[in-house]
Length: 516
Image (cartoon, rainbow, N blue to C red; front, side, top):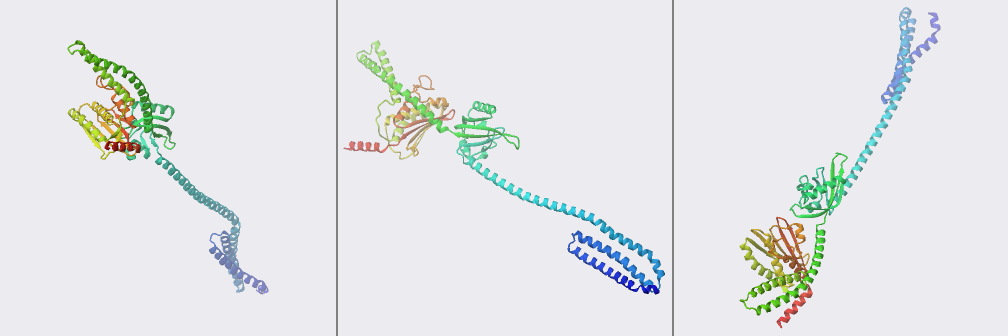
């Protein structure tokens, strides 16, 4: 015991040191816990907390053991200490192992944590990249969508605003889409009347033309500027220049056709009219020459025949022969006069003529006879039609020829419509004679004004009526046209010009002279 007291300074230092060890270790635990609470994800604070806790456990096992030891030795209970001594050593070892383990495993934990942090950073970077790409992708998609919208709007505008007919056909050659000009060309009011219900074959005028068109299209894959005859909704013929190209859709692997058609009906008709006018002009010159050459000998034959008739007794057998010669000679002279009218080489006596008055005389003359045969004549004259400077007798002859021709086209009952109105666009008077007779084929219509061309039986007509009418209208500065459809009827239209100022002055002078 005396030796024990001699170590008092050492014992005192051990007691104070053990106590301070406990206080400092728990202070470290308290401080590390605060750091951990402030930054829960910080691994260093976690490590310090665990390490300080292990050190606190170690300090308790060791410091408490020392304090208890000194207390028991100082109070004379050393035998109790001898009993606890092995346990305190074991506890100290375990606490020390804990501290060493924490220190030993921390670098591995730190490397794992570093890898986790690295992966986390990589993941965050990848997330940022994905967000950036997603943002850029949305912007790119929006840009592409806007470009596609503008492109679609531009091409739709071209499609809708084109003056030519543009259309799309499916693989069965039925209409899938068509622009407004196409609807107007074909006479439809809306796409729903045409799309999905009408095929290209149905608008072709002739089946043989369509079959040839399809055959060439299947061979070459496209056709450009093919002149075709199609029919509009009402059945009227339309001449077009048709171009069609076959395309294969990448999306649905289905073939379709894109076509463009240009309505050239007016141009073709004008060209045909010019060709017809040239041809008729040549025929007129020939006819005029022949007529002049025949007119003189016919006049001599007729004159001598009439002289012989004067000196021939009626009871004489030659008198009848001379009358036949006279009659046939007069027929020949009438034909010659018609040829001269056709060639516009006959004399025309123009004055101011009331067309309505002229036409009413003709209609009253023919109408009664036509009605007996079941043909009704309907008239529609615009009131207050101006007088025109023309040869009234020849215009009456034109109307007679047109009405007789219309009557002969009607078998059985029918209707002839005669109209006259002012055509403001062409500054003239438009006269039309329509019938619901048998109509004509296009080839017949092209030759209808040729001299001696007729579809009537032999003896019914000379084939000069319409030729004479053509020459008379041409001599008046007008034009005559025909539109016909087989089985539907025919319409002749005559356009006569309104009098100009010089003609008006001549008429005024004539009127004034007549009054004087």
